[in-house]
Each structure stands twice: as C-alpha cells, then as structure tokens.
Length: 58
Image (cartoon, rainbow, N blue to C red; front, side):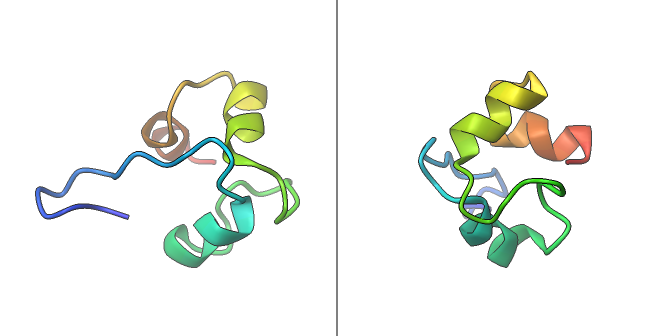
C-alpha cells in the first residue's frame, strides 16, 4: 500500500502473502502459499524489500 507521498509503506516480515495479495492482486508472489510470510518470500527471491520484489515482477 502506498502512503500519501506515493511511496510503498514498509511491511513487516511476518506479513502473510494472502494479506499482500488483497493489496497487490492475486498474482502477487505467485507460487507461494497464502500463509507464507513476506520475509520468507524476500529471502527466497534474493531481494531485501517489498519494493524490490514488486519491481522484480513477483
């Protein structure tokens, strides 16, 4: 989710993929279960932030 400045708000590493799919669409983190945590997805995808993951197209 973006803040008033248009920047993506920092998400906690324990935020579940299912929650993020509500904000970013069903194709977000495709191949990961909805109960997977953001921190796990970031680590497996080799990125440090949600912003980098979104830019990567996951």
